[in-house]
Image (cartoon, rainbow, N blue to C red; front, side):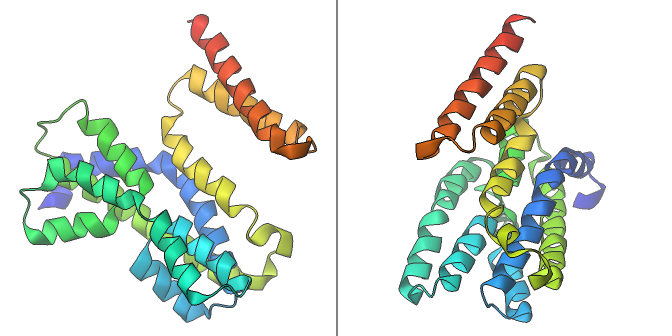
Length: 227
């Protein structure tokens, strides 16, 4: 069975660092959905059926602002267009797989799982353990996400209002970025950018973002040169 394959265990292990970003993002997403007026049961059902954090947060924000239903649909559609690119890339690995496996891959595909998949099989394109590895990573991410969203839904309005929606986007980027922090240069860049964005938060015109980017690049280059 696929769950006995060493590649499945490898997928599980590779996913563990990613959970540091997924869990808080999932909690915030659950809180945001409840705060936007979505009934808890519907919010949980949406999480299971949709399984797409960024579009869930966006739809929650739009619903909270009483946006037209068509705008909500179009916004989530545009956000999820990236999955078309993901599927085109994954087709190289799973085009010949049975329909059931392809449907499982389609459902479990997430930003983090896709990144881990490419990171491993770019170096081993002929590895026969692609499907078990994908399942190992995908199932762990799916389970952690659903548990985190459920936790956020249960917390609901108990979280301060200023925490509900504002942290969702930053947490999404954290979740995506953590797997790429693999050496001292990337860690230094992330730390420098984080410190800069906090220290410069009062700079007008959102220039703190540019300052943080420059600080991160500079720190990464300095550490890289010292190797």
